[in-house]
Length: 114
Image (cartoon, rainbow, N blue to C red; front, side, top):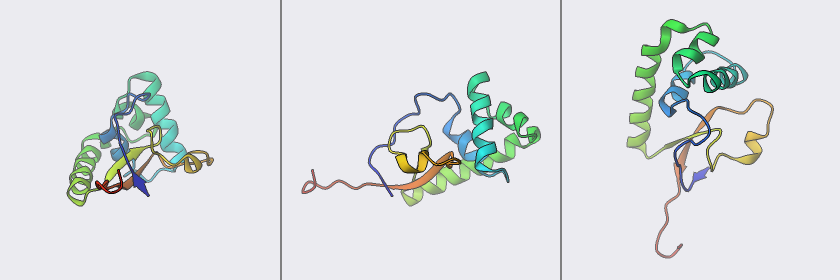
């Protein structure tokens, strides 16, 4: 998959690092999506999503893992694309249980391609 532009998430107050943090939990994609929706509706905090998932005490460790994953992805040239961001594959978002985010390789534009 190629991501041309990854912008800021517009409709969801849950932070990108928190979405990555949630992905480390042994929860189904459906449970994660419901927890994100709950947090979005309440206050956009990771702790709110974790409370819904009954993992309240995991916030600091999950954020540490998420920071490491995001740092590694930057070094490797990967981008994290959230479900509600432009560029997320439409067909994938239309399935019953889509991932809350994907790791993708950004497109490289050259002068010849532009």
